[in-house]
Image (tube, rainbow, N blue to C red; front, side, top):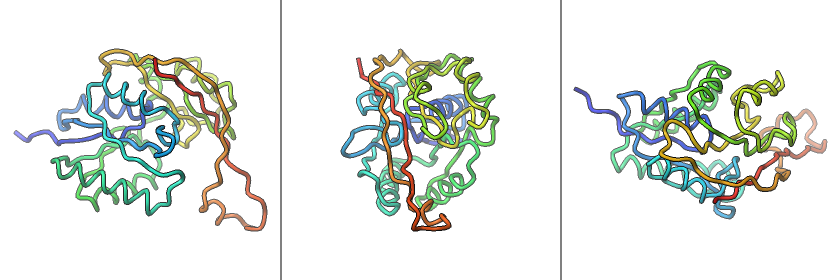
Length: 244
């Protein structure tokens, strides 16, 4: 009988990561033994989600899994990003890990990029949520009893009122038609604080909601018809979660 593949989940702390872990734990082909995440060196927060490292550690403890943290500088170049991810992945390979699990659902470019990157590290990239219907996934997430709070929204598509909300049927009903139900295009990000794979809830207090602006990525600037035109910044609403 084949032994299960020693695996780790690429972990953001959000709902897609949690569902990926849930699916993997139900599948006997995997032995999920660690979570791998990226945080900012200066902020000590999860990249793009803005959640404090302390809460992420509390979350991992509630799941009963060790957390491996990769530190990234502010707005790292692709070369720096890739070198640090490869370093972390290589270390895990040396520990006997063979499979890297991702929560991507339908973005083909990310699928190709992650598959190639992991292959170059001698790893197999697997995607337990791949090509599943995003509305059905969010409904499953809710019906399974997972609890998550929205920690970040793209201000271009969702206003401040969506940030800090709990993921439930009312949230799904209120999403505009042009927003993917799972936020697969980066419309929103979440922090999961309870659910069927948790030993106990992760306690937090909802703090301030603030708007942060970031430069438009260089690739988007390069694609502009007239590079001399001013390029607007990208705005994101962040709800600060305070550990209890």
